[in-house]
Image (cartoon, rainbow, N blue to C red):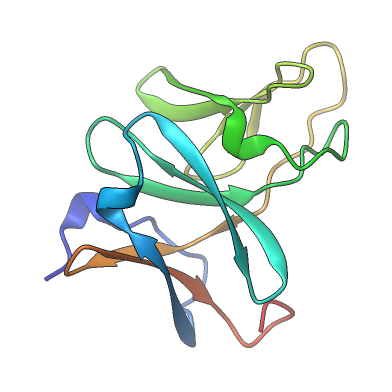
Length: 129
């Protein structure tokens, strides 16, 4: 059974759910990197058991480091700060909340579901598959 807190809203319904890891393998308030259909993804588990998926590539430095970012919150929105130049992003939407003096660039996000302790990422029939 999927808990409501474990779901992240998606712009369109995924056509494929790809199992990535077990929730128990993800430490709270930390990110982990995964390779999903040839693309690096940063998965983040928050203290309240929500799981988010954003692009692993930092949009400002192009380094594959987002899973190493600092997990936190701003105005009750779960966030991750890039370990490179400290831009802060909303984990649910990818929106750049603090571009640190640069033009805001959003992170790509994917829907996540957790069923029976397994974290899966949702892909659509667009370019992700």
